[in-house]
Length: 331
Image (cartoon, rainbow, N blue to C red; front, side):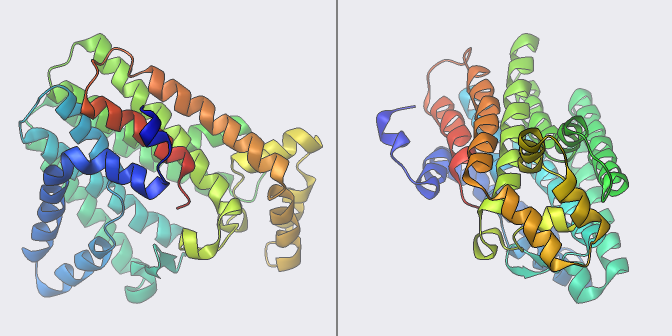
């Protein structure tokens, strides 16, 4: 990474990362929007609602940059990236429903506007659309990896539901964020490598890149749940804790305090806002946030190391800066 890019703001970093793949990202966005137009009026309305908040397209960016690094101009990587983005969107719809979240990215969620049943069915429809699209790559390993990711996402969601408001371990947390987040990053990196005909050992390296990027990305999300503000996050501060879930900053507190008493007090009094605020205040202490970021950086360093075999290129620069973006962003 050049000296110039280290001086960029997170927004400027993302612009740098995506600059060489803008045409591909636009085609992916167009594909998503065109899919919505093909459906009947009500389904189109639902799809447009979840698609209008386009997000940052981080996951498709990983795929397109890996393909670019190998000079792979085939459209099967774009198909796969579109499918994985749809899978991600489906999980958000389901997560918001399970968590009873009213706001996502600053707008009302599907279940808030149209009810739980409609939200669940919409998530199922989007997932099914993703599965149909990934099959068009006509690549069995990629289709297999996609199906495994769907299983991992479901496992993560089920574990999250089972573990909420109970005693939780750091191992459970790390397994959960792999299943719910890092698995998708690992899959999109691995699939882009496979579709670009990269040797197997290098496919493994790129999967490791995706895994470590995804772990760092989710840990930073979990830090921002305490260190951000509701305007930046598009959701209330401390939302995970309010939902009965311990994340990495909470485990840093547990390591420092030698117990989880402040969190168990919140879990046993889930409707007491003062008890919840006490727990949030403890996590927000500077030494907790600093240690949490240090752990996120361990994963980000591993992600950059996994790129070592790639020849120097503009795509590799973007993949490297993307790691830095993941740990410096504020939303």
